[in-house]
Length: 108
Image (tube, rainbow, N blue to C red; front, side):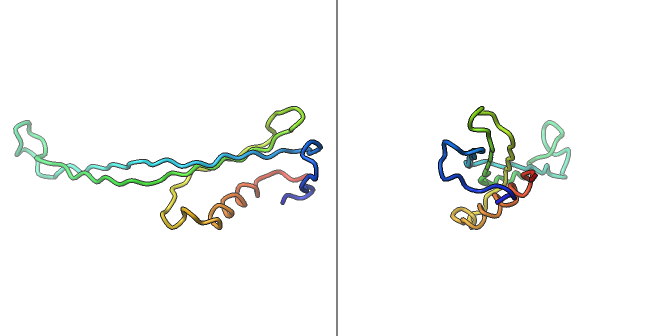
């Protein structure tokens, strides 16, 4: 926890609120490599292309600190990373990402 911050025992008296958003989406990556064999097709181009298709999961995490009285944000960070299958249920991975993001929180 950042220097000078401590959990509030009463949320109504807190000086700072924290909100977060965590989601993921499936994406597809396509790459193509035209054949080097030119001039054999009817239109003078390559006869074929090598197309590689792969899917991946993109995860997003956003963290915001806000003034609960004024309801205005005072700080925010976000990240977007590819999620490996082995990371899907790893609390440690999420903790490491959150720690790296909160390390950028300004201290007095």
